[in-house]
Image 1 (cartoon, each protein chain N blue to C red):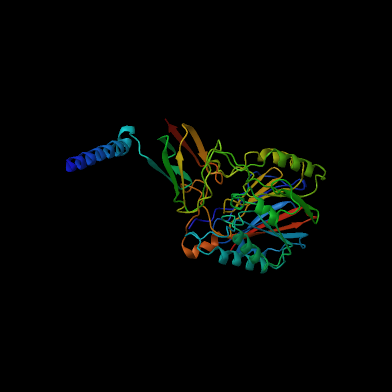
Image 2 (cartoon, rainbow over the protein chains, first blue to last red):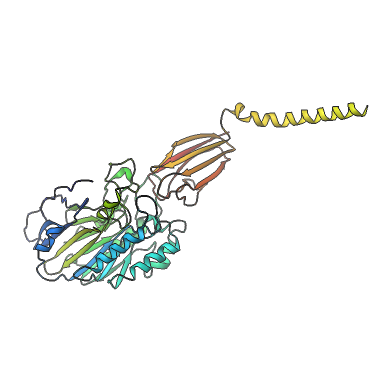
Amino acid sequence: MPEQKDRNVILYDHNHDGVDRRGFLKCMAWAGAGALCVVQGGVLKSYALNDASKMQMAGKSDLSFVQISDSHMGFNKAANPDVVATMKVAIDKINAMPVAPEFILHTGDISHLSKPSEFDTVDQLLKSARAKDVFFVPGEHDVLEDNGQQYRDRYGKNTKGDGWYSFDKNGVHFVGLVNVMNLKAGGMGSLGTDQLKWMKDDVSHLSKSTPVIVFAHVPLWTVYLEWGWGTEDSAQALSYLKRFGSVTVLNGHIHQTMQKVEGNITFHTATSTAFPQPHPGAAPSPGPMKVPAEQLRSLLGVTDVNYVRKRHSLALTDSSLE
Amino acid sequence: MKRLGWISSFAVLMMALVLIVVPMLDKSAVAGRPAAVEIKIDNFSFVPPTVTVKAGTQITWTNKDDIPHNVVSEDKSFKSKVLDTDEKFTMTATKPGIYTYYCSIHPKMTGKLVVEQ
């Protein structure tokens, strides 16, 4: 069982209040307890999840939502023969949160083989979630054979192109991107010129103090080139976000939690609710990772996101299913 | 007279059969390459990554990985449906050329098919 990495305290400054900034955040939850990363008054601190009850979030958050990812409905191999059960546990966990999330963000690979029955099952399971709304972006497993037509028919209302869109909640601007279409041989994820053009225009009218949350399936920074864990043209997308005070990028695809802070941007990837994948380079390939049955749920999970407007603080809490 | 006629007809028939069948059996020996080739998909790789065949060879890709993959040529001349574990894609390489292909779901997975005359 992988050991929990040291978590460094890091200071970073999203609201430019003169707090020191150090570059790299190592707030990772590899196994066992989750990690709570909280920014309060411009200071980011990390806590082991079992200490979280001792910590008090001063002031109610203005916006609370949950990120889930990579449900891979339909997967049934050794790494997890019952992805329905683990997704149910994830939803139960969401429903047990002290504050009901306003909505759920699913960062893709909803289905495993783009089968209608798989999408139907996920929709059915999500009906029992407390959250009123669910927003999606597709993973590569959701757009097989039909260039994503079925995905868009189901989840793409009011989206553009391959399924990108934006919306606002409580003063926070959300941008949903599609980076799993038209992938080139030997390449990684791809946004494409049409989507980049749309995104540039979409954020251009926002004031720089608007918090921006971008969500897409494949990571928008290169986590591991050899395994295609990155997006070819993400640099351009990120350049449109340089002027903003607070940017958060939420991704999935790699089935493990990773976080990185670069300038004004916090990148975060979520665990899967279906099966874990190995750490970069720790296995011959990025496929489903088999672990002893009693460890599986500790490597799957959900991410709780809380935003407090007047403090310009965004807290990301990763918690495992066990 | 009749029996001789029967024997010679039979002989002609056998010779004809030999002339037709033997070259067929000998085809691979003469060509030096098998008539059918297998490519395994496993651990996010095509194994072997490069395959050289004669035109007319049948090629079968079998997915032995625990994740679905597909086979798509860069020039769009062939494309499999999505293959789950143990599913196969078979095609006959007819036109000589060099075909680079990849898995369009996991595009880092690439392979090369060389088809000779």
